[in-house]
Length: 131
Image (cartoon, rainbow, N blue to C red):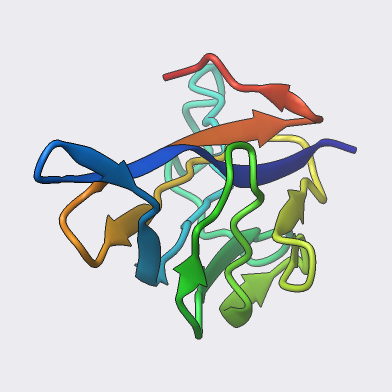
């Protein structure tokens, strides 16, 4: 079973030429979908099938500001809105893949003071290089 999490890669704010720690604010998370391929060799069967079981998707957000996150700090989106397949753990911030398939992740991290925040997607404790 694979586990996926988002971590802070780098976070800083420059004011008057000086770097100061930055804060993360109201963050929106990750969406994910299980994409199924169609078998085009079976033309008699409908080409588009509605997924009725095995759907995996989650959406969560942070209910608080994350002050001064250090490098490689796991960002935890603690309020799950949707968690189909129960793959996302809102206590650890880790998504465990419940079924094999293709997953799509999207997230937004904003700095309230105009600095920058680089984040990384970590798969099985290894930095993902898929971007």
